[in-house]
Image (cartoon, rainbow, N blue to C red):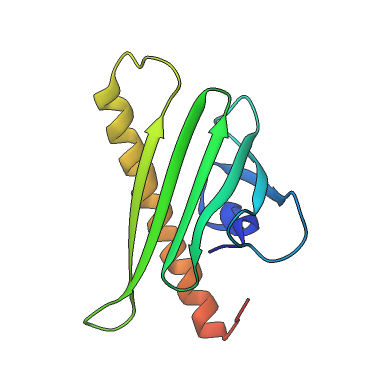
Length: 129
């Protein structure tokens, strides 16, 4: 998850994510991301990272900011539970915040389902990167 270059593999809205420095993703790592929906590039930064437990990413695109907190825990039924907490600040007044929120929730739900499939495929293939 800390290798944000894989974001386009599971997030339909992301075109590309490039690291701004060499090395593995860790706290302080920054990335440049382009998406289908943003007019400007997004700057991402890993703000918290605990392997296999927590990944927090902040983003900024123009005046819009967001924070994504991915928390991982062992599931009582086996496997891993992922909890995503998102804070979005659009940077301007939204005419219909309720509509924006419901569409965002739907898109995130679809992306997380796709992420689940990608991770399960990686685990089955024995890839450790």
